[in-house]
Length: 456
Image (cartoon, rainbow, N blue to C red; front, side, top):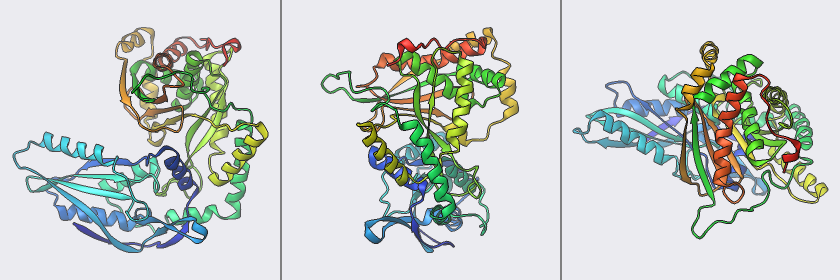
């Protein structure tokens, strides 16, 4: 059904910095990085109620009324519409279907929809469906383009969909963000960020894990993915975080760098990390992509794991302050460094901690950290799982490691290039994250066991 909408903030502007960054990733990888979700509607809801939720969401958030257009000189711009209509798909499940089956159907739709590509010049950046069961609207399912919101923005939209709010004329909208980034104050901020990037990139190798050295047989897929889940690593990292006064995200990054050094010999490790810029003035609640990559180098050589945690904390603080910049300016810096170096180079290892988008219960984490005694950790190690998820059909990095937002475990979803890392190295790397965390939890002086002699 067609759902009409109208809202404030119509106009055009250049693409914002976060949009340029995700657009580049889309072009390089062929992936649109679509986000998706589902909510259970209140009992007795109707399709008209679902349409009202969708219309209100479109009215309150200009990002959802945004499409790409071509401006002067062929430059991509974004255009926010003041009114229009959007389709709401209505899917009927037969009355004799039990509620659990209807929920599974909604979940299957949600998982399939994120693979359906958007035409950014024609489509609205959100699509939505209502699943009707036994005469009532039971579930609302949606897919959201990453081009108009980052993960934190997606959470804000989902919250607004569950409990619709009211329009706030003072809240910055997506065009406000892009226009502010064209101003002199933020242009200076971007230029300062370039000095950090230049220092990190000047001496990096052509690719993080070396060239393609592992031949694949006929028909073998080049890119693969796996998921590693460890309750023991979760407790151990909480204990290390409590002891060192560091947050869990930076502890996890330190353990990953240690495990990479042990499994591959790559150290120091220069890695891309995703940083939310929502701590900056005016960006806390904006619906726009304001998370950007930053880069940092972590040295794990001939030291303790606790010291790696300390180094990671310092490097992360510095890189986090340099994660708001114009990607076009960064492209110019990288081209200049490639010319000075005499070879093109890029950081092809990415770590994205999805938990950083979610508010965590610090009191509960502190209490859980106290459970990281040797007996409990030994018991939890028996619950570790490693699942080989099968092929991935496109990647523009050698390693992409997601720390997933799953309760009471460290869940690592790793995607990698099998011409650069063997499956055996990947298993050693993933298990090495757990191993390093448990060692550090039980012994503050636990060494990394990575020496300068093993560097590649």
